[in-house]
Image (cartoon, rainbow, N blue to C red; front, side, top):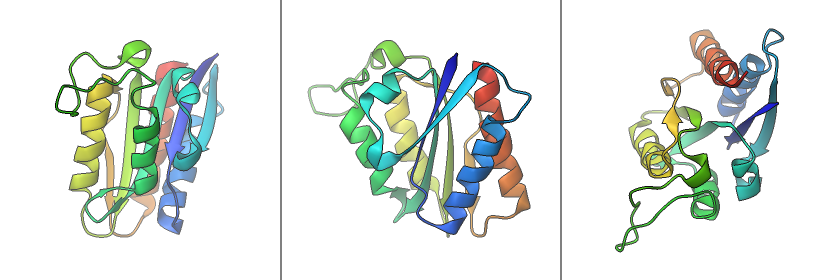
Length: 163
């Protein structure tokens, strides 16, 4: 059975609502053969990343960046899951290891702007050589019905790709 790992930081009602909607999509009854494994970003391990077939990431945009919790997730798993660093300590070429080419999706919620958070996550997953499988869901301001519907579609898309 394929495994979708959902790594998130959802400290607010808005980010929790997006998480719940994404999970509803990923767990849609018409999707068979996918186990959805949900882990808060501060608790996710490299073993969980290595045992997953795809990834769904969620974060608030804090001060123009991804949450510290999601950054901690990447910092604590990057090298163990195949990330590579160049001589300067930046993201190197040829990363990804056994997780290369695996699909991922991302949702980001911010009050005013999510650009920096989206860019930061994109840089890291590029260094891991993960494949973006759906358009990033960028939600600015209030989480409305359209945002929840898009989150449901995002979760469903990732799970469908693995089923």
